[in-house]
Length: 206
Image 1: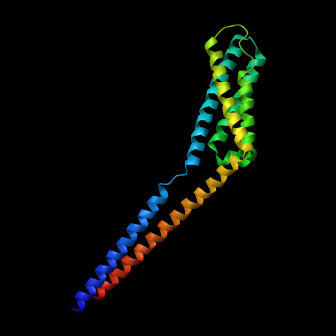
Image 2 (image 1 turned 180 degrees about the vertical axis):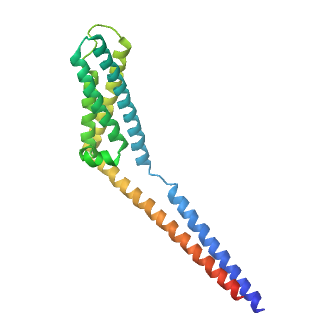
Image 3 (image 1 turned 90 degrees about the horizontal axis):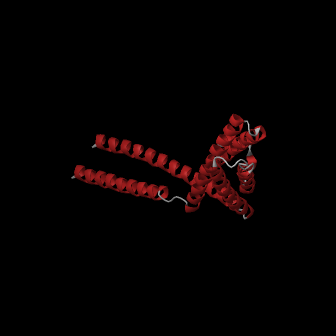
């Protein structure tokens, strides 16, 4: 009878521990499946802005090649090279790479980022094709420049409305929440290991 009682107690302990573990894992899953919609929208807009800046880079590269190759306007080619370099900074800023943000902390502010994007858009639109050739390239210059200018205006207005600050706060909260979930999983894993050791000891005593 004693052994049966102990076996039943061990069974109840193991079943209760498994139930607790399943509830803990369910809570962790719920925490992980609740992304912030605001951060998702900001991330999608960053992707759109980065793709638009890449289009500006391609347009300026082709324009620079044409200027240097035809010898039509050397100054236009040099101007396009500067536009390519600055547009690369726009793309890097949208990736929010820590290495870049460390040395260009001003790009963390949306107002400054928007002004930089508008500047690149103006540089892309500048020096139109005076000779009337390669109209497709001129059309791409207009499309890419106006798209990047629109993104820059959105960033500028959002920065003035402190939406960029709200994004940074939400990002810090998300990082803290993910770290808390990770720590909770480590504690649960450690608790499971300790429970397994206790169960082994009880079985050996029986």
